[in-house]
Image (cartoon, rainbow, N blue to C red; front, side, top):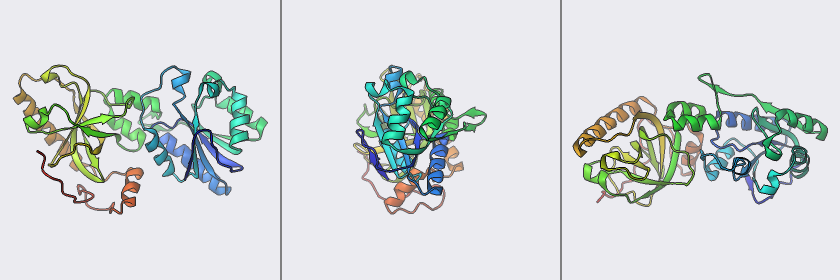
Length: 343
């Protein structure tokens, strides 16, 4: 797969182009892009994804929505679906002022030379984001571009969308958000030094420094999986301000079960499987320790009932690239690299 940036576009004629922000790469996005690839292959043409940087809402609404998938991960996930190229188009103020007709004629028809364009049911474009899929169909007919509008995908009776997933995460509903994504929602960041209270309490935590603007689930305690360099551990995550020790800044802290080692400086990815409880203040550190023990027991029990192997095709592909065996018994770690004891 080729990636084109800075206004560069592929020199491919009569390609099939999927257009959208694709933040989250949820089930709807996956279905739309997969169909684009199938249609292109049937006609022996190239499949292209056109996406934007920054997110269009940053200019159209004055504020970008919280990020579900940082750009490198988004592009990697798109690539897993078999597209030939991804065009990351700079969404500038000048670009935002393009009329709907100019976008279709100059960008889709002129620069990308699209024979067919594939969009989701809620796609909007043109100056102010006022044009809809019906406008796109009319303009496509005038410009000789076939327009395919993909219908909404539903999970548990709710329409799948990036907006819905952000709302669910903000409510702590990580299970439903995960079903809409087709995988557990995950955040990634570098492990940095914290105040060391977890280690003092007997439950050392990895303090995660995440990307600015990343969408974080609601404050609370979660069960999930931590992954570092292909190794996976059942883990607890606490998102909050640590009220037992006084209100502080909102942090993301991960406690890996059955792990000893020094993680400072490592890049850790945590997948949110289940929300266990709200964050709350305890009268004494001892009460907090007892609660963490109960949290760990519940997390272990829940995660043991689920397959330890993620069905996320991106992570499976990453392991294959590293030459790791993605098969194996539930609960098995992907490798047995030992780490030094934590000081």
